[in-house]
Length: 86
Image (cartoon, rainbow, N blue to C red):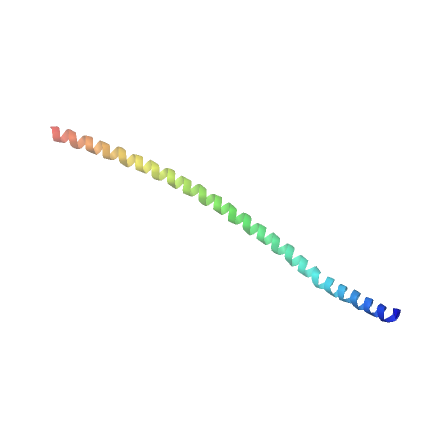
């Protein structure tokens, strides 16, 4: 009875070794993909921050342009009134 048990133990050990050989490159692949993912995520977040900054700048510029347009319109109205009164 001990002999068949040894054969089974030997087979299980060989299967474990075989699975370990398969796991090693898979583990390396996982680590590589995790690094690539982290780099891509960092790049994505960086570009997203840049986009937010640009949008903020654009909104500020639009506000300034709007204020400038209001001032122009006010001056035009004043000029128009002064011309009409002459």
